Amino acid sequence: MPPNVSYSDIRADDLRSVAQGRRSFWFSLLFLAAMVILVGVAVFMGWIAYLEPLIPSQFWPALQTVLALTPAVIWLVIFSLWEYKSDALRRTTFLLWLVTAALYLVTVSPLLAHVFQINEWLDLSWWSELAGRLLIIAPLEMFLIYLALRYGVYPGTVLKIRTDGPIFGVAAALGVATMVNLLTSRAPEFSSLGQGLLFVSETALGYAVLGAWLGYFLGQARFKRTNTFYLAAGFLLTIILHALFFFSLGFLNARNLFLSSLDGLILAGLFALLGFLLLYWRLRQGNKAFMHMAALVEIKNEASSPKSMLEDVMHLVENNQLEVRPSPPPPPPLNSYDPGDEIDELESLKQSWESLIAEQEADK
Image (cartoon, rainbow, N blue to C red; front, side, top):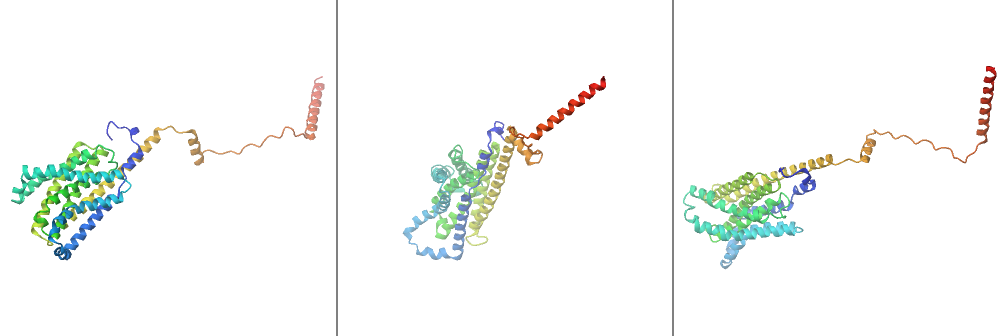
């Protein structure tokens, strides 16, 4: 807990609300993964190769654009349909995707093409590609995603729960993936319909994992007030993962070591599966910690609040420590008259008088 925050400033209900989950996020990711698996099966079975000659050549440029947009649009639509009641959440995810894609086009893309000129030396050797991705491409792209999250959602109130960090991270990262796919739509990777489907699927899965983890680290900094170095270490980790993943993806696609044309998709699927499973485990552990903290806050507040006397009495009664005695019988009525009572009183008075006379005569 930060030094400037006391238990009186923290409410248990707020902690529980932060620890809530969003099934829409995981369902939309599962749906996207199912679509990617369907693409892989279609390519492997040859259905795409059979369908490709039926597409007129004049439709191919438009089809390339549709392919580049498809993964992000699928995820956004499924997520929005599930979160139809949360207008702010739906609008934020859409705007993050759109703004990040536009910023990539006017910032990162010109820097890579004209300032660093990576197209001229990136593919010269394996070490030049690895160095270029690790030192130039990955830092620029991940820094753009970080800026979109840091100044787009971090200061406002739309980031309400811990799962919102990965959600917004995926939205921003898919904006980068969409623009990368659009700019690569004229490259050899899009020479056929099957290769185009594989390329956009691999790219979308890779960027989705990286954006989700960057959003997770930003959410940790927001809700747990972690050290500044924690966020910096998380940002550095996403850069390393970005460089290694896309370097390995290019290496496998160029050599076809296992399954022809499906090596990259298998790598992207394993990367996404491992990344999101680990992210789910970390979010679950963090949510349990917040729920435990909420219970501790309630116990602390109950101990500091004064107890009522009625509560103590009820506690004694429940523990059988307070014996409830029967009430005494009511007194006789005042207007009731019994003649026998008066005779008894006169007889008693007579006996007392006679005993007194007897005592006086004995003294004489």
